[in-house]
Length: 105
Image (cartoon, rainbow, N blue to C red; front, side, top):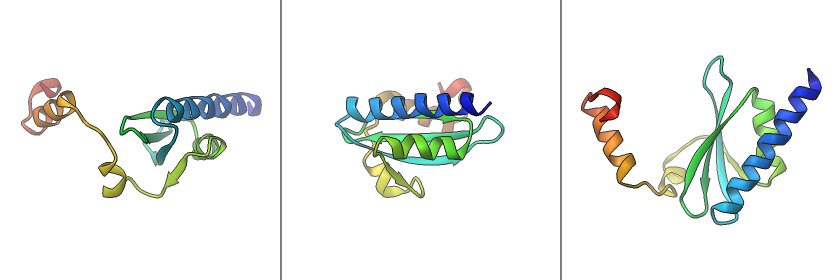
């Protein structure tokens, strides 16, 4: 079981580092508990691209972020959101969700 956990953390670290390298060479991350499925690592690259990864535990998420030198933030605040680059798809989807459209459309 511990070997499994170690492999997952190593894989997450590799994915986190690859994201940072693909998106401007650095990234910021915030970790949030999302229930039984685990913890979400929200990532925002230096170029504004954003994405997320799922981790089985907070420890695995923190280890993955720290292993790759990604800046870990306490909260997904306005400053972090300000770095995000959103496009038409995101704006249309958010508007659809707000208006109660099925599936965000």
